Image (cartoon, rainbow, N blue to C red; front, side):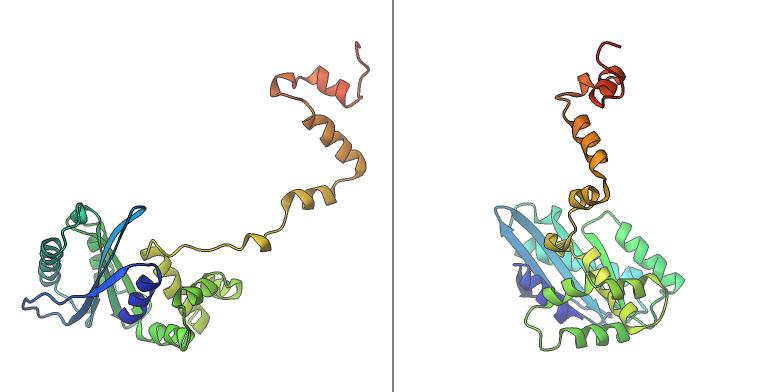
Length: 238
């Protein structure tokens, strides 16, 4: 999964660096550091993929602390300590997190210290399904956009099931939530023209009434007597 996330960062214009600080850890993991430092963008991400689900929180916190120290010491951009986010990729056995793991994820994401923290959890099956979707594709971002805008897959996702479409959409939607640079692109050309639709539903008489009402130059003119005169409901001066 980490390779998919890495490519998404590449496609979003981030510089991706392989890092592996030298410290002893009982937690098997992979990691990379991504940054973008432009006039209009200033963002840093540490991504860690954990190879096991049964994690002792105190040990994981030591790993996080070591990474934080390493990144701050080796990167000299001003404000990096305030603009650094941590994304943990966590493979689980089932879609539903166990209560203990659910609590761990919540506590980690709500912890205000060092990093803004995010946890992306997924199953091995979900990863395999998404991997098939992006196979031989040049742009993973485009594939993700197509999936997140797929109405049929969204309907499957809204109806609790174990169908492949539901599992794929669940993971893709999580990526959009956790990675703020992934934004849903809406094709405005496919959106209907609401004004035209309304006009097509109105009769000629109703259109005339509408035009008379909107002909008032300001809302101050909008009083009942003038309105009735404008609509020719009563004659002027009555």
